[in-house]
Image 1 (tube, helix red, strand yellow):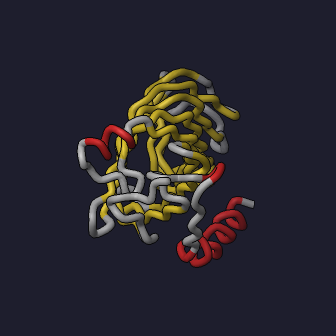
Image 2 (tube, one colour):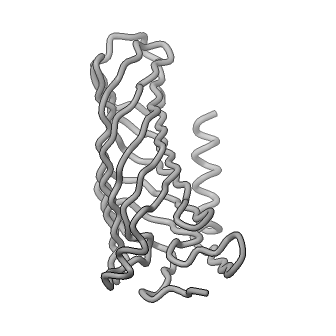
Length: 193
């Protein structure tokens, strides 16, 4: 089942990376936020897709290597990370004449991650061999995208790790990605009504 999901996501990459819809005005006025942003992560191999929903709000999903560390031990492997982001400093960055294209800003996010047993590389958690692990919590993040498309994203947070066949517990979340934004970005001076 998981292989089918990964195959479906990989087959949709060309469609997602070419999506460049521009909506202006009304409910979907995204003066600073990119409508679609697709990133290839180089440090922790994988990819990220971010969809701008409303002013300063987006959802993102990331498939890549990650480590879960909590009371019971650690899990390292391929993980699916999801975020609901609220960027809080676009206006201030613009006022200081700093870059906001490529969703360059600081955010608070509700975070969720799933570490699948089939995609696990290493663990020291005392549990049956085929356990899954989920993370639910909050993170504070900093994302910057530069002129040539290079991007970094740093997140710090904490939450609850729920084990499916493994012990549950609380722990931190630290994430760092460095990569390249494959989609076209807005100009430094965004469209404003």
